[in-house]
Length: 420
Length: 80
Image (cartoon, rainbow over all chains, first blue to last red; front, side, top):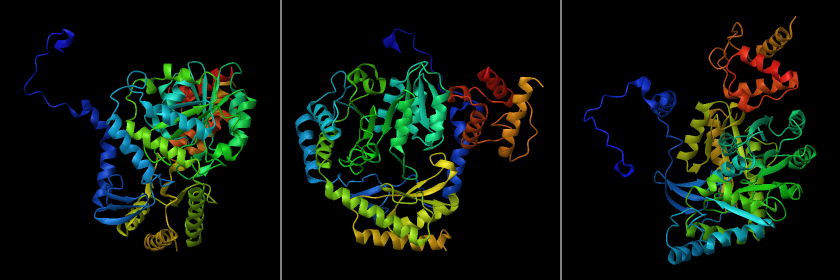
């Protein structure tokens, strides 16, 4: 306070307790009570798991027990790749542990440039901008692209980072029914012609693991003169001939204006990015607040990301293995009688739909006690108020692990009445 | 019948399938408090209203609408 030249406030030594109605934390009482009630039933808190040791992309020690990891987004198993680790160690030695600043000021090191070059090569685009997380890439791009009086049109099942990007900006927000080409078309048709519009789509929707009919949706968006952003966080590395994502697989590379991605899934570290062929793309660095007003990624992170991305480009064997794993888990679970989020193995995420929270938590607990970690997901993160156990596969899962996983699911499913 | 009354009748008819508690509807009925709708129900309902009147109620506008009467007024304005 004295720095600002203001008279210091006189402190009361025994301040009165804040009345409950003025305690800003009181609004969280219902969620605190709900969580407590869940824990009081004797289950492990599903949202407080600690990995004590991580042995490989597919194995960790949780509560002293060897556990198969089937709930991480380590799709391509790059986290323990020797070249990736070496790149990180070298960068730590040569550049230190952090950048201490914004990309715009002192936070751009050699490997920030190198990782953006690796992205340009991987996606075959002219522009690449790295953000500190995938969340911030969506937050920054959506809030910056669509300004006042312009429109963002988004899928109802969009990720929280997309919704938050909308809220952070000043544009008008319009929502359409999940994956409905007709609904998107109708809504675009009702909007005034003149203002700029951004249609936001996702290649893979992460809760159920379903994919978007991007080809049709992008065509509709273009008919209405809208620009398109596709979030390909859950498809990078294994969708499309070059692993660029669902948009590549469906042949809409020429019509998607902006691709959002992340380093925290297939790349195996942390960070986010946007790539684009737009000739004015670099201007984003000058106007995008979530890019400017935060510290840049540590040198070791961008070095590992760059190495990983260069290897992912040629990771055909891993790509094949990941799809093989997804197919075998999907067909195995289906044969056991589980209700799944998708008819076919559309992605590396396979979601089991359960009746309610009690069943979901009971089953999750049985699996964990048996040495298997999957994600539990509940509303509001899930669509249509569903309770899910979500499995995400890794290229490094072995057929023996998948077989063991299926045995554990069978036992837990019968014990909880999820399957007959 | 006035335009507003017509819109009111149509809106309340659209509410009925989502009116699980059988709340008696008026202009003052609130979606969150009286009808106890969660965000998913609101989403489905708004989409139904949009399609019924062939309008767009942006999420920015939805944030301002708390009662049936406010929704009817908003629809009237959007249609005009």
